Length: 474
Ligand code: 4AD
Ligand code: MG
Image (cartoon, rainbow, N blue to C red; front, side):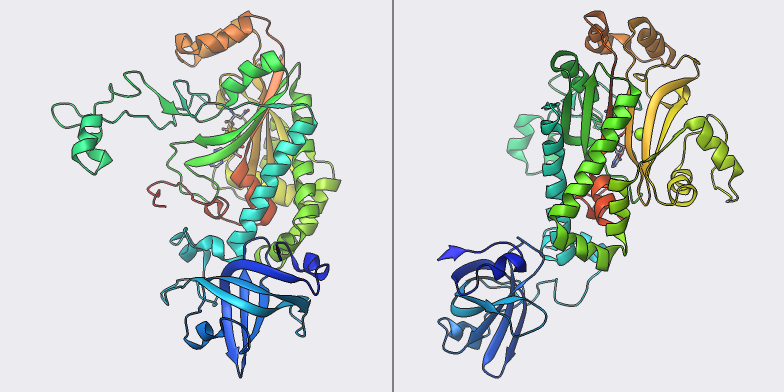
C-alpha cells in the first residue's frame, strides 16, 4: 500500500491500486447508504472524492456524526474511474480512520468567503483552494529562481538580516533592541523588557548589545562584496521596510531576490532581469498547470495568455526622459503632476504598462540622479544614473536595479552630497579601493512576482503571513 499524492492525471495511472490518503475533509455529503467525502492533502488543487458504503471499516464514525468539514482523516481504498463527471478518479473506501475531529465552529465552510475575511484567519486560509494554489505557485517560483541562477553559474549568498547599514539610504528601517533579560524573567510581556530611561521612555542607546542595528532593507551591499570575489551571486531572503504605506503592493516584511553581476553593465543587468522573469514565468506555466487554470478561471481571466506573452515577446525599453515625454503627451489627467525630475507614481507606472504599451513589461532606464540611491553609477550627462526599473501591469514596479558606482571618488562625492556618513560605509568603499570592477544588479520583490504570476490583486494574499502597519498577529 502506497501513499498517493498529485493531481487527477497521476491518479489515472494508478487505477485499481489500493492506496492510503491522508488529508482534511473539504466537504461531506451522505446520501441513502452512500457517503461522499471530498479530501484534500494540499498536494494539488483537486480533492479526492472518497466514496464510502456501510460495509467499509470505520463507517460507524460517519453514523455517529463525527466527520465534518475540516476534520483530518486517513482513508484506505481502491482507486477507480469516477462515475461522476466532476472528477476523473475516485477512491472506493475500504477503511477510514478519523485522525482529528473538527469543531462545528470551523470558519471556512463550503460557501465562498472573501479574501479580506480570510486575512483574519491566516492560520486556516491555506486550507482554501486559492491559498493552497498561491502557496504551491509561490513554492514553484522560489524553486525556479534557484534553478535559474544555479544553472547560470550564480552562487547563492546569505545576506544578514541584522545590519548597521541602510542600503537605500532612505531611513526606512526597523530598529533592533536588546531586551533586558532580568525583566523577561519577572514578566510575561516582552514590552516590559524593552530598556527604558529613568523617565520611562525607550532607551535607544541600548540597542544591539550597545551598538545601533536595524533590520535590513536590502541585501545588496553584502551581495556586492561577494560579487567582487565570486563573480555572479544572488541573495534570496527576507527584507524589511518601515514605510507606513497601506497599499496593495507594500509589505513591511517581504522577500527579495537580488542578483549581483561582476564585470557587467546596465545592459547586462537588464538582459539578466528579462531572462530571469521569462524563465520563472515559463516554469510555472509548464509545471503548475492545474493551479494556473484555477487562477485563469477564478482570479484573473486571461492570465495564462498574459503570462505566455511575457515569455514570448520582447519587453519595451525606454529612457526616463522618454517616459516623461510620453506621460506629458497622455490624454489622461494624473493626480500627481508630471515633470522631468519627478518620481514615477503608481498611476504613471500603470499608465505606461497598461495603456501605452498594452500590458507588456516595460523597462525604464537612466533616472534622474536626485531621486535614486547613492550607489548608482552616474551617467556621462552628470544628471542621470544607470538605473533601471521593470514595470509590469497590475503590479507596477516589479524590479529595481542599477549599475553600481565603481569609482571611489564619485562614490565618496555622492555620499558627501547626500550627507550620508562615509565612515559607516567604510567597508563598502573598500570594494572600490581593492580591485574595483564594473558591476550591476537588481532586486525583485518576491511577493510582487507572486501577485504578477497569480493575478492576486492584494500583496497581503501573496505571502503566508503578511506584515503590514499594525499587523503581526499570526
Ligand atoms: O527598488 P528597491 O528599493 O531596490 C533595492 O532595494 C535595491 N537595493 C535592489 C538591488 O539593486 N539589489 O526594491 C527592489 C524591489 C522593488 O522593485 C519591489 O519589487 C520590491 O523590491 N519592494 C517591495 N515589495 C513589497 N513591499 C515593499 N514595501 C517593497 N519595497 C520594495
Ligand atoms: Mg525601487
